[in-house]
Amino acid sequence: MDPEIHLVASIDSPEFTLLTQSLTQSSLIGLDAEWKPIRTQQSSFPTVSLLQLACQLGPRLGPDSAKSLVFLLDLSAISLSSIYELLRDVFVSPDVLKLGFRFKQDLIYLSSTFCSQGCDPGFDRVEPFLDITSIYNYLQHKSLGRRIPKETKSLASICKELLGISLSKGALPFLGALYY
Image (cartoon, rainbow, N blue to C red):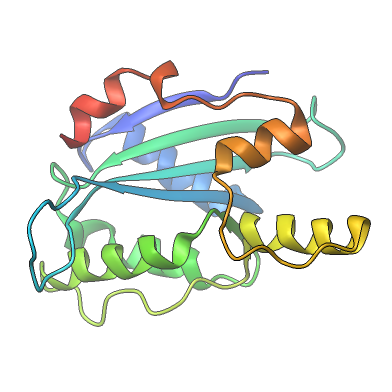
């Protein structure tokens, strides 16, 4: 079953209400942040413009019993102070496992973005958290006896190799318009 995708551009929207409900009912949340690349030498971090949250709802009895919802938070349209506590609470909730791909850098940029709007101290941790890169490297080392590679594969490469599926940001052409 394909996940439902919701664009959240206002806290006064039904999508925001659904996001709030989903975050409180999820036991597993996938995280990803997007920003416009900086092409010059700047001392500040890029501003995160889109936060993607994938929520798994429902019982964990199998793929057909759980519902997945994906939320695209347009951080340039939403007052960051209005969602700061909600996100902070989810990020540190021991009842929600967070999953990401090299999310440490995303968290630094996300924290900087929120701090620049007066949401101090930003986000200093996400726990419990599993990084897909770490899982992949662990599985490669255990099953094949390989050394952990110095270069990290892309998420698309890992998904193709382990799951046999292709990922493509081109499949969602409207995303580029949101953060560029």
